[in-house]
Image (cartoon, rainbow, N blue to C red; front, side, top):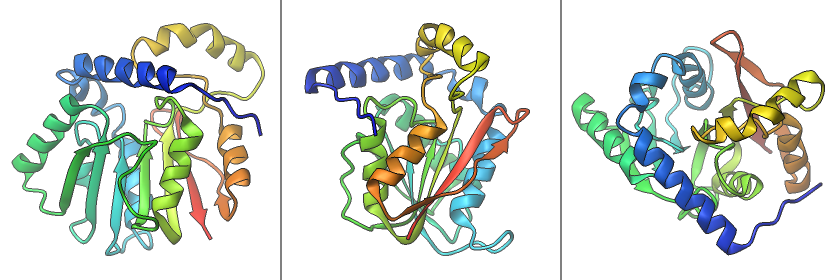
Length: 226
């Protein structure tokens, strides 16, 4: 597996860059993304919070990249939700949403680096990573942290825009990479990269991706910890 190693200085610069980007985006984020991501958000919650299609489970769930809290209202009240995000500006809006909607099942909102989670091993029944894996400086490290805090038998659900592994689409995405980076997105993260990470980590089952609206543009992947 090809591993991209960054120095501590490079990682620090990337993290500060992300903070600045989302400090600018926080005031208008909901206006742009609430409807665009709603189907993906709902399906992500269903994947992590329901033991079957219609039966909510009593679970401790970690949401990595909680942002302004757009997903929080979708969780059933039987789940205990812990949300983390790098951006304090986004977390302030998530906290306001929790108070406004009286979401008593949200137990914690905290600023935290996805690559250095402050939780013990096997703390959560499920982990959701909605639209965040393409943004962290060290994706494999973030995935490994998510797997570490996930209980055996639990499920990690990754939802994002996965780039094409090859072909004309991959070339177009490579050309657009500098542009989409300016708005905090990325086209460089491939599904194959998740599979390589899971194989190297061990004890993980990667299920086939599920498409979400709009028009299947976003995909959701379930990773089971055996």
